Length: 123
Image (cartoon, rainbow, N blue to C red):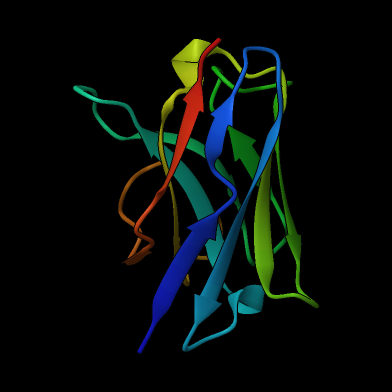
């Protein structure tokens, strides 16, 4: 059974940092393109960042550029989202998603999705 699992969410003060992790069971993420998305209450799901399987190409949403960093550790079969300088508007459920496309995008048309991890930025 193919399954994605996110972890690392929590409550953090504004200006703080969190690192989210995305792992898979049933397959290895090494050969897959990964996207990170978020959805805040009452808002549409938003693409945050992605990393391509073919050439490692990376994209970020304008709202997180310079603050978030996506990376992958193929030895651990894990993709990370390092989130620094967090703001209250970053509060959302964060999801990782994956499929076999060669070049990633911040669209929502990924095939596999995790259940999400809550990130709350508040003082």
